[in-house]
Structures are given as structure tokens and as C-alpha cells.
Image 1: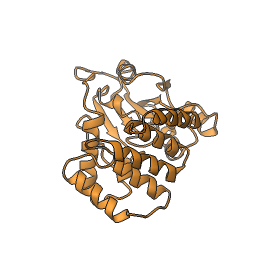
Image 2: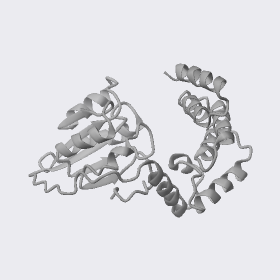
Image 3: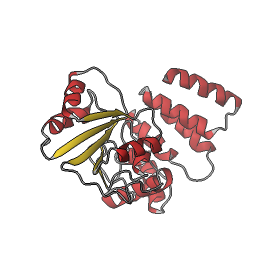
Image 4: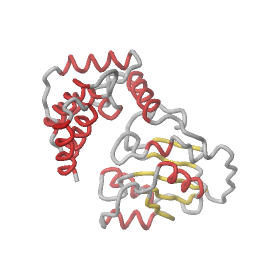
Length: 253
């Protein structure tokens, strides 16, 4: 309900025009509607009123790029690089993928972001001594439907050797009724809807199903649930496909 959200943000900002988070949330809603130029302007206002470090410069820059607005491109890029080199917030990792000129800096950006947004909150699998005849793999994703991730992954799930593996889907999205969704339903042993569960509740569900290896198919992309991984509900946790870079967190293997 992005249009409705924007109307509410506009109301809030009419009452307090200096409300940085209001401008930021408005920018996020506009991004979801692919109104990138307007989104960039909202993030620019957020940057204007934010005291201290924020990710807003990177968000402004990313939205401008999505709108093919190359004004101040080198200036903004260099400023983001400088902030991250100093260990400061400059950009979220997804937007930074578009401008990063070194793997080292991309890793640093991810570490800053993960430590800030998704610090380790526990280790639910610390004392797990699972003994299964078949290795249990959990795939956590917000796009188990007709979407790029599943278009690339569905045949892989279908080809898992079911004599050696049990595979579980932890779905943060929805059933779109597509042919891909039907194939996904057939490929997995179980599919759990976690879209309305808290991070901790979803983590406990994963632990209760004694998942040996948990695969993060979002990372910093799409309908991500990075916070679930911060509880380490599985002994082995890996990042794959959705976000083509490191998560920069010690709880990811």
C-alpha cells in the first residue's frame, strides 16, 4: 500500500518537515513504486536533516543511478568510498554493489552494515547434535514464486538427491499460483510460511526442524530476513545467489 504510505508520510512531514526518518521512509515507498527521481529527492532531504552518520548518501546515489541521473556521480561515489574507508556508514551493501571498485571495500561496507543492522543476537544451534540419515537443508527466501531467484533455482531443488537430503523452504513471500510455485511445492519436503513470524519465532521454527545447513537466498536483496540468521538457528549458514557478495557477519559461514 505504497501510495497510502506516501500520503501518511506527507502528513507527518507537514507537521515536522525536519523529520529525517519520515523523508527516508517516503523515499523507500517511492523506490518500491519505481519513482526513482522522487525517491532520490526524499533521501536527499533525509540527509539534510540527519545528524551524524547514515546510509542516506548511498541511497540518494543509488536512486539517482536507477533514474539515470548522473549529476554529481563522481563526487557522490568518492564521498561514499571515503566514508566506508573510514569505517563509517556511507551506503547499504546492495546499492554499493553498483559502484564498488574493490572486493575489499565491498566487504567493509557489508561488515559496517551487518554490525549495525544485524549484530549477532544468539546461537540457537550451539548445542545441536543432530543425527539424521539425510542431511537437512533449509532454503530461506522471499521469492519462492515466478521471480528471477526461483527461475534460476527451481530445477536445482528438483534435482536434489532425495536419498541423501531433505530440503525445507522457509518462505518470506507468497504463493503466486504460478507454474514455478507448483514445481517448488513438489520439490520440497516442507514449505513453511514465515512472512508473519518475528525473526526469533522463525529462528526457533528452523531450529525445531533440526536444519543442518541454512541457505540465505536473499542476503541484502529482495524480501530479505537477515535478522533470522543473526540468531544462528542452524550449525552451518551460507549466503547464495540473491546477493552476489559477502554478508560480512561472523554468523555466516
